Structure formats: structure tokens, C-alpha cells
Image (spheres, rainbow, N blue to C red):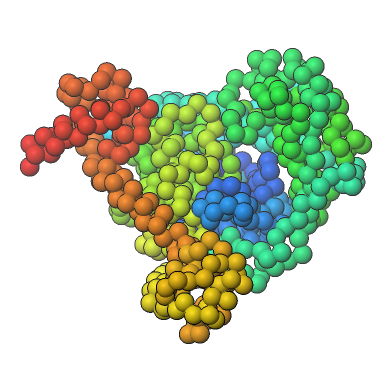
Length: 637
């Protein structure tokens, strides 16, 4: 029987947020890439919340953009409301969040993919991975990827494969007793690839997530809700977007609350919830619980926030944020109608839970390549994470490293001191997690250094060296870095005296007068003053862009804290630089505790820093490991 057989450089399986970034990265590196999707209508689909960014997630999108990703640019083109969160707190936790026009977001991303050189979109279900045994193991790898096979029998030979299957593998959606074996939004599930993965020795897991109902806008009484407006001055996600291009007329979101009536209805029907009836096998996300979970686990709370958010400019569908559920349709309608403003609501789409297959991500290197299968990479919810932003970030790294591996270049590993993306990936591949992983600012030890405002300064060079950032973009960042340093030095060298004029100025700003001369930088470091506030005293000041002023202000104000974190990073880096040979035999390290030995054998960490973060490996075990490595390395010389 004749068969279709094609040769490409990279196959990307799945066209969600991870798949789009992976495919674009490979194609932009000049590699012939094909991206497979069960439906071209699902490209960059937002099956749940209609927004990008949020606390810590905004950091991921900014970093993704700095490396050469597309999500930031795409949301800048298609957002309908934007807000900087946590603005009353320090800059380390400021996070941008934008409401998206769902349909436009998907359409715009598809257009980018369709017009990207070296990239082909193929609507087909991948059912099998083609791999061969290596004659001689390469590091930890005993197999090598050779391509994929589709449901219709077509074979695509490839030098690398990136798996970004999201929530589609053996997916089933649950709404009370009603179960449909589909992916999100009723799209076709991918039912065969799991078996192929298992045959290659890949360890699989079963996770779940959920989404709330969508309401008809015309049936909602917004007068009973609190209006939530966007920022007066919008900050773009992408460093490449002109800030003036995102100053648009924004739509409003709305805030309301559940109440005891809502909770009583839920409690009375818990036996009909698939979660509590034992029908759902998968583990759900701890930090994005269903309304049933909230009512059970936070029984002392009399109300929970509910955000009503538009799904787009050209639809009446409204997203009911905070009330995801898998309860039956009749219970959903009853509980939603107890919420102020939703008394007469009409449901357009029922809330549902979705179960799906994913992997244990500890089978991956920090490059997101499988340890055992050379050339096979993966990203997104397939790796056991949750969220569009976490998915896109992993997709970019997986795609970038797939491309670099084909080009025989060193793959990129972002560590915990470099990026939130580094924290995300390190947590996934190092720490045991039995639920969908969500990024949070509290997970980042060095968050004062990893601010969303300086992502370009931290990561543009890496994107440039990988071939995803243009020389013009990189040169701008180099120039920006120099301008920031020059301005801080200038402000540190200009002194002002303790005269009457200066004292009156400071008092007018609510600041204490000087007793001795001080530099302009010292004045800026005062909590009540800023770069802009002291402009009157700075006669030699030249005009600088807002992004440079922001960096000057933050670096001066937080100088002491930043220096302290940089010292902590130095210590951290020392451990990360101590590599662990892939062929090390932990059973030879007799002084290691049994638990530590078992964990190290299982996880196969690439360096001592990663080993120290494995649950069950103590500081004492690390000391023993360091002594052993010293002897091991000296004997190798």
C-alpha cells in the first residue's frame, strides 16, 4: 500500500500556546518545521480564561517576549482591557494582565504561523512516535527519535520532535453525569499517542482541570456588580510594541460574589459532582480549584469572588471567573442564579471538568529533552503544568533547544537566578508534584532581580544568540543598559547642598531637609522621592525614555536589596556549576542515606544545585556528594 512519507527537521505535535511558540522558534531558526493539530480551528485556542498574564504569569510572558516568543506581541494586538496588578506593592511583584478577545487572539496567532517561512501547518492526529534503539547509549539516552506517524498512515521523518499535546491526550469532559470523550470546547481528543509513549517507556499521569460556564451578556444585571476598569495608561507586554499603539478604548470587567445560598446548593449536590462521586481519576490544580472545592475546603468563608469577563468584542459570551465546576447542568444554573447580577442568567456553555494524560516531567532534562529519548522534547500542560503562559514559556524553550540540538549547538538552560522560566522548568523537572503546576511569585527566590520590567536586559542576549532576536533588537538593549548605567553614575556624582532652597523643596515633597550635602541618587533612594520628583533639582538632566527612567529609579531605590540578592546568586551559581557525570554510580557513595541515594538514582540531576533541590536529599547528603565528586574528578584527571 502506498504511503505518504516526508522529511522535515522538526515535528511539533499540538498547536496550543506551547506548540505555537515551539514551532515558530524552530522555523525562525531556519529549520523546516511542521506543526500538527487535530483542528486548525484550535490554533492558540483559549479554552478557559480569556486573558494573558497575571501575578507571576505576566513575568513569564515578558521573558518569553525577551527571548523572541510571540505571545506578548499577539496579546498586544488583540487585548480589550489591560491592568498592572500589585501596583501598590514593590516592583518585584508588579505583573501585567490583559483581557483578550479570544477569537481575535487565535486568528492573529494563526495568521503569524501561516505566514512564517519554513513552517507548515497540518491538520492531522499524530498516533505514533517513531524511535530507534541507540547502538551505544549517548549519556542517559538509549533511544533516538526518528519521526512521527499520523492516523492516516503518513510518516514524517524528523531530526527532532516536540510534544505539546496540552489537554487532548485521551481527554474526557465531565458535566455531572454527562461525560463526553472530547478535548476542550468539544474538539476531537487524541486517543492513540499515549499507548505509543508508554511503549517507549514514558511514564504517564492523569491530571484534570476545569472551566466555568459562559453566560449571555444580555441576561446579566451589571448594576448589581462592581465595575473593574483597565489602566488609564496601558503598558504593552512586548518590548517591541510601541506604547502609543496600545492606548485603546477598553472594555470593563465586573466583580460580584457568591453567598451562603450558593454554597448551600453546592453542598446539597456534592454527591452529583464527578469530583466527589469518584468518577474523576485525575488530580486537579491546587491553586485554581473548582467552586465545589472552594466551598468544601474553605467552609468558613461566607463568599468567594466572581469575575465576569467579556470573551471578546464581537460576542455576548461572558466568562464567569472563579466558578469553574463539574456539577450537573441543573445544579449549575441554580447556583449561578444565586449570585448578585446573575439572577436571570442564561448559560451559553456549561462549566465542565476535563481529564487528560500527561507525563511525569522528571523524565526531562532542564532543556526539556527526554533523558532517555534523544531528540524528543516536550512543553506545556503535557509536562504537568497549568496555564497558557506556563505552556508558552516551555514551548519556546523546548522548540529553541530542539533547533539548537539539530544545529549541534549548546542547548539553553535558564537557571533560577536568570528567569521565572528557569524557576518554572527547574521546579517541574526537579520537584515531585502530583498536581498541575502553577507559577507564583513566591516560588522565585530571587524575584527582586527577576522583575517583569527588566526581562529584556536579562534575556535578550540569549534570544539573540539562539537566532530568535534581531541584531537591531539586541543592539537596542545593549545601548539601553549603557544609558541606565551612565545615568545612575551621573546621579551619584551630582551633589546638592543643605541650603534653604533645597530644604524648602524637600519639605514641599514631604521629605526631611538635608544636614549635609547629598547626591541626587541618595535623594531618589528616599521612599517619598523618585527620579521624576527631583527633576527640579537636576538642571543637567537629558530626556530619557520611560523604560530607562523606570530602571534608573528601581536600581537606585533598591540598590542595597539588589546587591544582597546578587551575593546570594553567587553562592547559588557555585552549586549549579558543579556538574554531576551522567555515569556516576550513587551506590558507590557509601555515606549517602538510603533515601537520598534512591532519589538521586531516580532523578539523575545534572548538577549539585539541582540535586540539592530534590525532596529527600538533605544538606548533609550534599556535603557527602561534594566530597565524593572531588575524589571522582581528581581520579579522572
